[in-house]
Length: 382
Image (cartoon, rainbow, N blue to C red; front, side, top):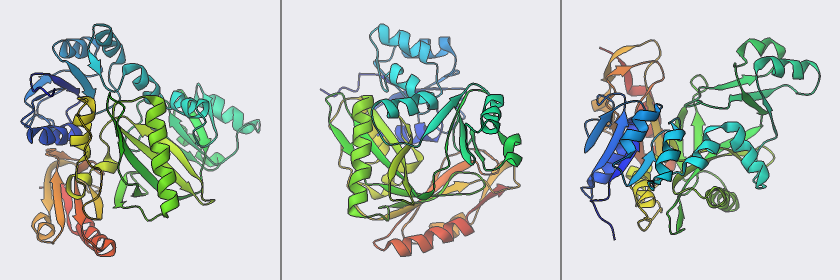
């Protein structure tokens, strides 16, 4: 039986936490959050906000002691504290042992390999010197993509190395190196699972990236792929969440190659940028679905009510300081445009400051409006 007396705690207080808290408000369901300051986006909407560091053992352990269920809005949390809380009988989603695999992109790739899930060929290296040495010895071919094994987020921790002239871009520390895939489209599927084993997947989305910031610029739902490709994407996402046995949301990022293959890029066990459009265009938002899944409630309908395009609202290049949203009223006046601002006081170049979801029965018309928002809503300093 669902009880609001069951206490849910979430590690992280950024925009994802804010949107989870807003979804929980529909049921007047209180959630407790942990992050460095209540001035972060979630602070104003949390039923309870604890100031602390989610990477610190004591902060995480003490935060979780009075929670019945613990979840995350970012992977890079102290898993040792979560493992101890699990020993003491707390319910933790995703399970900290699975989180250890997902946090380490090398272990994540090895998981796909072990379970015969399609992904690009890769090698693991302890440091940058060994990567260069391997290239010079002919054991590693250019071009390739390097990813740090931990802490990568929003395009950080990724380097594309095309020639020896790019060696200065190679990142330090343990990393994985994978083939530079010849990509036709970048896709993603948000899938959810509860403790009873019920699984629900959202329609595949198509992502277009900003070439400078390596962040999603436009997201199209439904993706412009064939019904057969849609089935492969959804089946893959469901297979990953089943084999990982993750409860909650899992965002499965995929590549459609020029050869027509669909392979797994990486996953994130939480609400994700590729699911923000669901607030306005799906019967159940990804944020409500995450609560349903981790609290072992029946999962909601993932069907689209209407096609949509999402635009990430990024801080304008060249501006750092108190944020000013130029063109806000102009964009708000466009039919079908839904603006979501995260409440971050300080803007920086390419910082995620919000998103806009444009809904329209005609996806081409939605794209025109999305381009209008991108061109006219400029986030700069006062």
